[in-house]
Image (tube, rainbow, N blue to C red; front, side):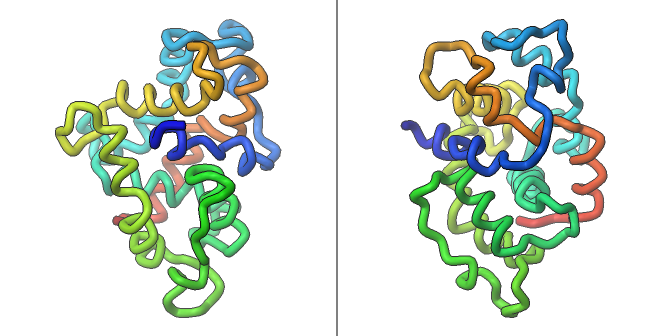
Length: 190
């Protein structure tokens, strides 16, 4: 499994949330199995990438990317990451075997990670993943780089089709309005 896959690969496990699968999010017109082009079109229509791009420059800086991760880890949208949310998030993005102790990053021992504490975790654990997604090495993620990373990660069997079985990886994702509202409240993370 590539680093890109590890970045996103554990999503199905953390997607224990009761969220709609991509077929429902993209609508019936897209069917249930996605080649890259179909996925890209459907994903683009969700507004998710645009919501992450808070400065509207059509690219994701590392700060925008890390803030999006923080918002995704924060499943209950209370602007804090609990130990349980941390476990689900690390499993989703870094894999079930990833061993990171929540207490290591909970600097004030309040049982939650705030933006600054998550930023420390991000700096130690995600900067290489961001660099791997940045295939043109310009220190920014284009929508194509971000979408390709998502698609490649969800295509667990590498057959160039994201099937309905693999779609579970995306549950709870792709609501551009929801993620935009949370990102505006979270503020910078990294």
